[in-house]
Amino acid sequence: MSLLTELTDLVSQAFVDAGLDASYGEVVVSQRPELAQFQCNGALPAAKPAGRNPRGIAQDVIDRIEQDNRIEAASIAGPGFINITVTDTSLATHLQSTIAVGRLGLPEVEPRSILVDYGGPNVAKPLHVGHLRPAIIGESIKRLLRFQGHDVVGDVHLGDWGTPMGQLIVEVEARMPELPYFDEAFTGPYPQESPVTIDELEEIYPAASQRCRDNPDVAERARKATLELQNGRPGYRALWQHFRNVSIEAIKENYDELGVEFDLWKGESDINDLLAPLIERLVAQGYAEESDGSLIIRVQTDDDNRDVPPLILTKSDGATLYATWDLATIQDRIESLGIVEMIYVVDVRQSLHFEQVFRAARITGIAGPEIVLEHAGNGTVNGPNGKPFQTRTGGVKTLRSMLEDAAALSLSKMDARDLAAGYPQEERLSIAHLVGLAAVKFGDLSNHRESNYIFDMDRFTSFDGKTGPYLLYGTVRMSSLLRNAKEIGVSPGEIVPPTHEAERALLLELARFPEVIERAAELRAPNHIAEFAYELVAAYNRFYEACHVLTEEDTGRRAGWVGLVAHTRDALGRLLDILGIEAPERM
Ligand code: ARG
Image (tube, rainbow, N blue to C red; front, top):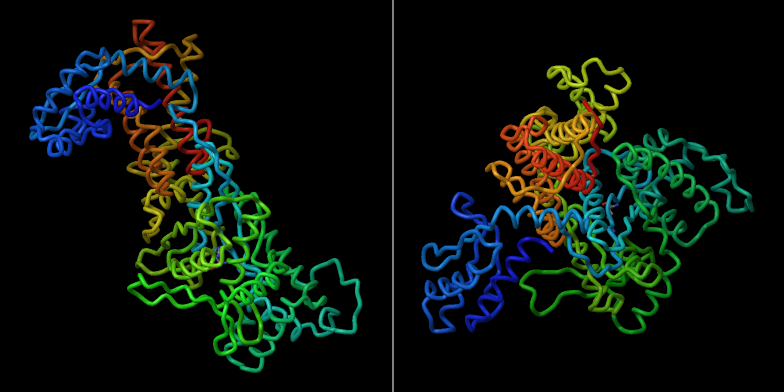
């Protein structure tokens, strides 16, 4: 049980004993740590309905909780706030018991089947900087909910079914008309080998969409090809399958480099067979109606104070669209995967799309009220000028080149600090790689998910301040202290009651762990984890300055401190893992 829960239970009981409602007893971390560790503000709202004076209630509660041996001091502040400080012994005992139970004080949850839809890369397009936020935020949310104990799967939801596919087909036909994919008389089998590599595909894609913009005839052919692909024309399907395979291979490599891992590699196309029966049902039951040849679902409600346009289910040629696929995908996830909660980590600019899809899913009964559908939108990464991040030549920067830059800059900053000096070159490079990744990920995750931020590689790779490298350096220092302790034969002992202010502060910081996790999970907000990880390292560094662990003469205290360091490193390791950040052994 967390310390806050323990204290809340104690204070709530005191409210009950004073004839008041238990709900007033909530204890929070104090806003003014110089005055007290914790506070309860319940006496103020309790006063009016009870017809009592808030300070009187506060005193009544204080008189009761003071009896408890965990309480060091309790006092009234201002109009009736209750300030609480716990004893050093109870702090130590509390921390020791969370170590014994494991999970760092985190309560058990009732596991739910959750799917996180993130990444959303598209066939034939290289991963660029714009893909960074959804990938690492989604990955972090997945790990966070998994750590809480939920059954979580991540789905990449590949963009593989729209007009771009028809454009690619038409462009490849123009360049290589002799291929069998375009010959309707051809009965197969089609070649095993892809006619295009990923590099060619990445060149063909922009050329194809440019040609469609320039030439209406080509655009019309691409439209037809898209429809025929969706309707199952064998040659087009076979060619598209090659596009898909070579793209997935390249995309996987990119996500691997980023340390982002998906359980499911499904895409927009996966639900194609569900579409016809679904559309038929929606028409038959009157949910879908015709409008200018298209089929639409109206999702506007009387409570709306803005226009929410209808969801377009099919175009006039019968082709299905982005929203249709997302709608059918919801049905598929519920029916075939048993998912009860779907979290979409996708650019906030798609919020209207998700609003329409979620409403349509509710209206049509695809998702019952027990199903959670949530768009956890992400902001964008901008370059130093506040505009979308670009390469020197003006193109969009690929993810790979950004990570290479980060590793190179990290190496020079390590050199400037004499870090990893004298290590084998191979190890130095692999440390620089981890530092670069930590820099990029922490730089991103420390911002609120919905904000846009300016990518500042120089600041992100700094070893000072609120950065990934600072956290890694902190972890490495903890590990090195633990290695040294082992060498002199000191093993981690039971946590001792703190005697230094910095030590007490570290214990209090560690006690916040469960609430931080819960809050971050509830808000789908990894920035709370990032912030807490930073504060934990800062608290550790102050402790390390004040308490000379390995030279401490009192052997019980020395072992206790080593135990505290081990516990801090575990907690930090867990937080970094949730952020998707890996630390080197040494540097
Ligand atoms: N591929 C889409 C894009 O590039 C993002 C997909 C997001 N996920 C979803 N289920 N719609 O905009």
